[in-house]
Length: 184
Image (tube, rainbow, N blue to C red; front, side):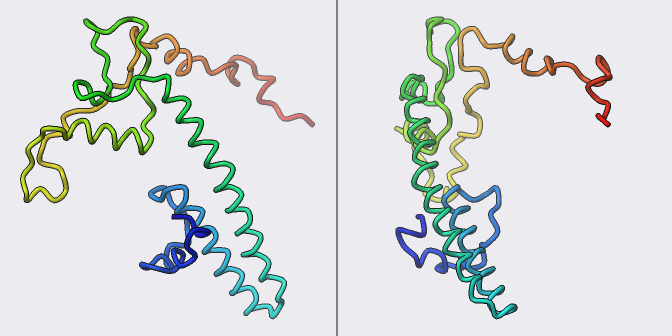
């Protein structure tokens, strides 16, 4: 939940200690932690320098995080929704959207990108009619670890495109030494 929806999210549930963004956080949590850091930094700078102009730091950072949340994140979400509308969706018979080289057509669309909605849909389709143990707290004993989406979900695979991306690096210093010299 973003801080404009509920301001107490910044300091509830030991969130006051999470003021540095890291890779394990979602984008909204990162924006909240940046705003939390700006509040801490603003208070520390005001107390250390007795200059009240530093109170504007959290206000400016708050406006920036609000703009990023409202404009940038909605564009990214709508982009992935439009992108995934044209792709192969999870089904009950094929929850991981893997291609079947024998029965699928060559014009089959690639699998969807793994957004949170798609991950939940995969989980729902996979867990249908699956009997689980009551003691399986972490949802690990039913063998889902054996199943995954294959790296190439197109028929035929994009081997040439991958090889070009991997090996065509352009001119380097070894081929053309003029690219590496400094201009005086």
